[in-house]
Image 1 (cartoon, one colour):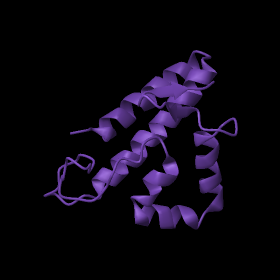
Image 2: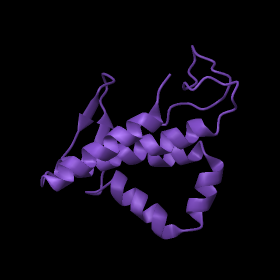
Image 3: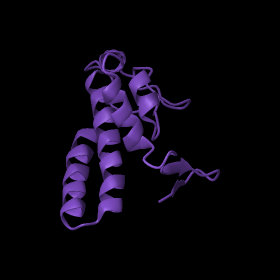
Image 4: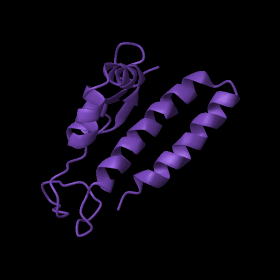
Length: 121
């Protein structure tokens, strides 16, 4: 089971500490991870009580159809229709999410062909 709510809180505090210590690049990265954890926690919060809070995979059927959106906010929003419809009503919020996810015009986290994350700063 993945506890994205706890991860969100921990990453939030990590981001604050990095920001207050002048570590702006690290704070920007962890801020993005913080938002990702929050979105994933919100997805899991919509699951019925009977479902396991795990992502559906080819080998795992947790009682729902949500697959892991990876590091993509757009993919995460596709898994939470109510949140997506609310955000779609406020283009500025979508713009903020896009800027957090792609601060230099490209995604800072790219999945490498060997399955590992590669970070670009």
